[in-house]
Structures are given as structure tokens and as C-alpha cells.
Amino acid sequence: MKQQPSNAKVHTIRVEPQPLLARLCQHGIFLLVLFVLIFSPLAFGAVRPWAQGPILLAVGLATGLWIVRILAVHEIPAVFSPLGAPVLVLGTYVIVRYGLSEVEPVARQEALLGLGVVLFFFLVLNHVRHRWHITVLMWVWTALGAALALYGILQVVAGNQWSGVFFRYDQYIGRASGTFLQPSQFAGYLQLVFPLAVANFLFSRRSFRERMALFFACLVMSAAMLLSFSRGGWLGWCAALLIIGVYLIRRRGNKFRWAVVGGSMLGIIVIAALVVLQSTREPPAGFGPERETDRPSLWRGAVEIGRRNLWLGAGPGMYQWHYPSVRTLQAHPDYASNEYLNLFADYGVIGCVLILWIIIAFIPAAIQILEARAKRYSAATPSNRYAFTVGGLAAFIAVLVQAALDANLHAPANAFTFAALMAVVLTCGVHLRGADEGASHPGEYAALRLKGANKLVLVAALITAATVLAARSRRSYPSYLSLRLAEQAKTQMDWAQAEKYYLRALSFDPRNFEAAAAFGDFYAVRATWNAHEREELCDKALRWYLRAYALNPYANDVLIKTARIYDLLGKHEQANERFTRALQADPNNASYHAQLGLHHLRQGERDEAIASFRRARDLDGTDPLPELELKRLGKLDS
Image 1: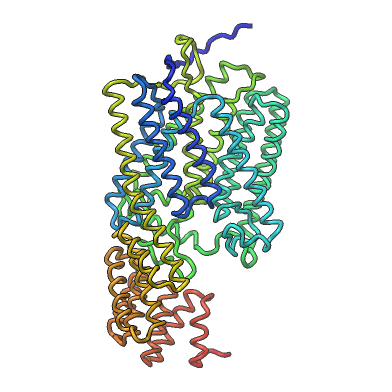
Image 2: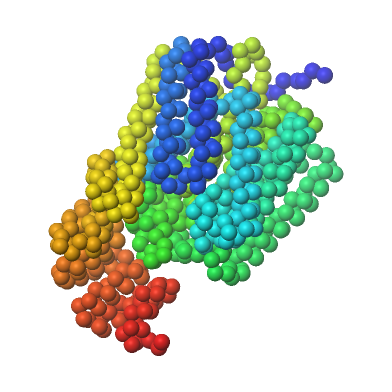
């Protein structure tokens, strides 16, 4: 029976055969996209600079191949989509806000990742549109999610035996975190890939064996999600299942609909009960939610930061410097456990409005694709693109829900996966055909035909973005690698080689205050081993500490290090002045009070030392130093 064409308005363009160079560039871009999506979750969520470097390099190379592909043809289609405008404006605002930041090296990494995610979104939007592209991505994400889920389950089952694998931390023993550094980040990644597997199991045209593989992957990811003990992850999981259940009900009969409603309600009740149970019970030592931060305090801190500069925010990456009163000896949080408050703190009202624009643009666009495809295909006709769009919409909603309790998008693996997922969902509404110019296809997206001046404008924009990415990355990552090599040489007491690497790190990035502070630490360590040159080495350490503090006046730890050097040189007045300045900036830091107590003790000021140690103990009862010193002074019972 002949199908009736839908009434959905569709923009189709005729695609002429591409030259070999253009086709090779397109395949190369797709391979680089796969590299980013596979490497980032396996590299511990790519939260460390050593992992972010290869990712941004791959994005830069893919952008270069896109430029070559554009120049290789006379006319080329460019997909912009309704989401293109807010994403482009947000990326521009990230760069502008980066330029206004008070401490450029702190904000630089945030700007690089923001620019990289924006470029990655448009790369996927314009180069991942064929059926086999979507199939490959679906199976890659499903395989990664299942593999990481199995590893997370093994972490919980094996317990302490696997606690040291992949740099796991003691406070997360008993929780599934996969290759991510935190269970909440791992739960955030599962929130992105789990709905895809479920939707493809229910709505796609996969074979029976493929469906069984998807069913197994869904079970494994569900178990890992439970064992992550992430309340935000559970709530997002519930939201994703709710969206999938709604579309499942719409495509099935009445009996099946009531069965789905009952099963969904049961699942929601179970997940809600788990959330309540997890929030009310007291976790044992070394287990449970992230104990190193006070969630309400961090939320209040983010609000206070945003209120200081209501429209523009405090600047990307500046959280830990602008609100130090929540810091302790154990924790130096750089963001609150709420993505919306982090956005308000860093980017102000403008950033929140831009994110709201993206949300408003994406959800109707995805629903429009689903409605157009539902009109074209009957309820009994499965569709791979329909399944991918349902899974993508469910994952998007899950991330919006989880963002209220977890800051998991700060992990680049989740951010890049999220951007790729949105872009692929939008390409499910774009059909580039050459033989059926007037035919109707689901979706309503304009694919622009670029040639002449318009093509050159796009090339110029891509070259500018790639240049900014390369210029900033050239400073950051060689400096970071040199600094790591210097630290390794210092550990081995190879002083000459370590000094060489420190100087190289600062030559790559003269504004790297962390390298300057580390260079000061280097001379301070040498001073403890070399009594004959101690005064000269202390002077060098002071010079580098002062340079580090000049580059970042929020780095209060440098003040403490400077004060200790002055103490060592017998300059007690200068030392006392540095301790006072550090405590004025960070009055609730227990370690600072402990260091001030030691300073008073060295000067024979017993009463002042006792007061400082007591204050440190009150702020952080887990710190053994004040307890030991107070006992030694005879002020506590043994």
C-alpha cells in the first residue's frame, strides 16, 4: 500500500558527487569524532589536562579537515539547525568572558573546553548524518556504556581489591565509578548512553540478536547506575525512563499501554525509594556521597558569587578563588554540586539565558522530528532514526534533571558526548538526497548551499576558531607536560634536570602561576637538603613565590609557603604578615590556622599557638596536627 506523504515542511538539497579529497576529509572527521567519544571516557573522564590535550588536538585536526573539504568543492551543504544560533552565541560568550577573567590561566582551560565543545557540535552536525554513521555511534556508545558498567560493578563486588585501579579514591570504595574519577560523573555518562540502548531495543529495526545484546547492555548499565549511589543519577534515570515510556505508550495498543504505565510507575517508586533511603541513612566511613564538600554551603557560595556580578558572573573557573570560606584542609572545591548554580556563578544571568535558549530550541526540535516520523511511519513500523531521537531526547531530559544535584558536565567526557548526542539527534531530521528533490522527508531543517563569498566566510570563521584553539593550547599543554616532568625529576632528586623542565614550563606559559609556585617549592625542597646554600636557595624560592602570587592574587597557599620561608630565614615579622593576609582571605581554612600555630610555637608564643591549634581543630576535627601539638603543650588529656 502506497504511503501518503506527510505535510511536514522539509528542506532537501541535491548533493552532487564529491571529489575524492572531500570524501577522505569527511571520513577522517568521522574517525576523529569517534576518537574523542571513545578516548574521553576511558581517560578517567578527561578531567586531567594530559587527557584534554589529545581531545582538543583531535577537534582542531577535524576542523582543519573541514576547511579542506569546503575548499575542495565548488558548492557544499552546511547544516545549521535551530540549535546552531544559541550554541554559537554561547561559544562566543565563553570566549568573551574568558577575556574578561581576572586570572587568565585559570579561565583558559574552561575557555578551551567551551570552544572545543562548540566546534565539536558543528563538526558532528555537518558530518555525521549517514545511516551507517548513526549505527556505528549507537553501538560504540552502547559498548562503552556496557563495558564501563561491568567494570563499575566489579569495583563494588571486589571492593578494596580494585580500590587502587584507575586512581580510585578511598571515599568512593563501595560505589561504582568505572573509569571516571567520581561516581556522579560516571552516572552522568550512563545517563547519556543508557536511554539510547533502551530506545533502540524498543523502537529500532535491529535484528533479534542485536536486540538481545541491547537488552543485556541495558541490564548491566542499570545495575551500575544503582551501584553508583548517585542520587542525581537516579533521578535523571527516572526522568529518562519516563520519557521513553511516554513514547512507548503512544506507539502501542491499549493493553500494552496500561502495562507500560504500571511498570513505569513501579520503577519510579523503586527509584524514589532508593533516593530517600540513600539520603536518610548515615554512610559508613569511606563510603557514600562525596563527603569532602558541604553541599548547601557550596550552593550558597555559588549564589553569592553570582550576585557579586549579576550579569556576567565571576568568570569561568574562578569558583575556588572567589569563595574560599568553604575550603578546608581536605577539600578545595572549585564548583558547587549543581550545574545551574555553577553556570550562574561563572557566567551570570547572560549565561543562564543562553542555556535556557538552548533548552527551548532543542526540546521542540526533537519533538518535531518524532512527530514528523510518527506521521510517516505507522505504530508497527520501527525506525532507527526515530529510536535514536527518542533516546537522545530522554538523555537530554535526564541531564537536565541530574544537573540539579550533580556537576557531572564538568567532566569533558560527558560534555563532548552530550554535544555529539544533541547534534546527531538533529541530523535525524536532515535528509540530503539527490534524486527526489520534491519528496517529503521527516524533519524541518534548512541545509544551506554555500558557495562563493558565503563559503569563504565560513572558512574564515573556522580558521579563526582553530587558531584561537591552537594558540591557547600551545601555551597550556606543553607547559603542563614540562611541569609534570619537572615534578618527576624533583622526586628523583635530579635537581639539574628538574630546573631545566621548570624553566621550560615557564617559557611555554610565562603566566602559569602553578609552575611558578612549583618552582618555588623546588628551591624550598633543595634548601632543606643543602645547608651550605640554604639562604641563597630560600631567596630564589621567595622570588618565585612572589611571582606566583603576583600572577594569581587568589592563591593564598602561596602566602603560607612564603611565610614559612620567612620563618626559616628568621624574618618573623614578614612571616606573621603573610600568615595574617592568608587568614584574612581564607578564615575557615584549618591548615592555615595550624601553620600559624607552628609559627607562634617557633617564636615561643605559647598562648597564641594554643589558640591557633584550637581554632584549627574546631574547623577540621580530622586534622591530627592540632591535637598532637595541644597534647604536647599539656592542654588536653592524653
